[in-house]
Amino acid sequence: MTQKVATQDEENRLSERTGRSLLNWALLRSGEDPDPRFTLANERTYLAWIRTATALVAAGLGLEAFSGNLLAPVVRSSLAALLLVVGGVIAVASFAHWIGAERALRTGRRLPTPVMAPVVGGVLFVCAAVLTIAVVNS
Image (cartoon, rainbow, N blue to C red; front, side, top):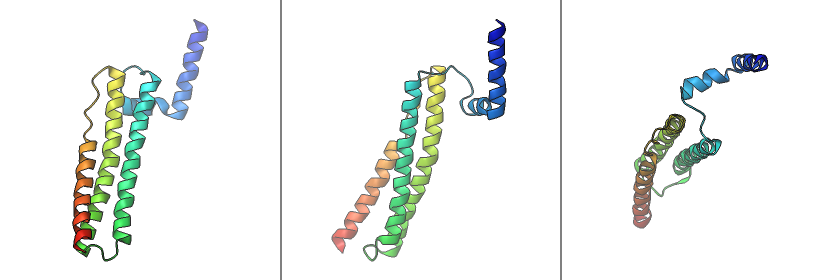
């Protein structure tokens, strides 16, 4: 019994020094630790969405910087802005989804509905349609 108390005291001192328990509470609030495989799968999904957001931002910058005279300036800037904004929104939304999924895993609730996939699909459809029209008309 004494050894368990000593171990708990060490854990409390470590968490106070590192701030881990405060961060854990602030982000995840309550619940039990889920199977690590689920947490790691959730993290991989988050990182995949971050890669998608980064690709959208890079596409927006590339479109604005390197498309030349392929598109009218207003169309080029509009598409680039759309890609940049959606990239930023996906980055924020992916973090919110990661936290929601982790909280659901910890409390045994249903996982939140993913809303980012249709948004990305719609944005890419609009960009592809505009670029196709521009290429055909040039």
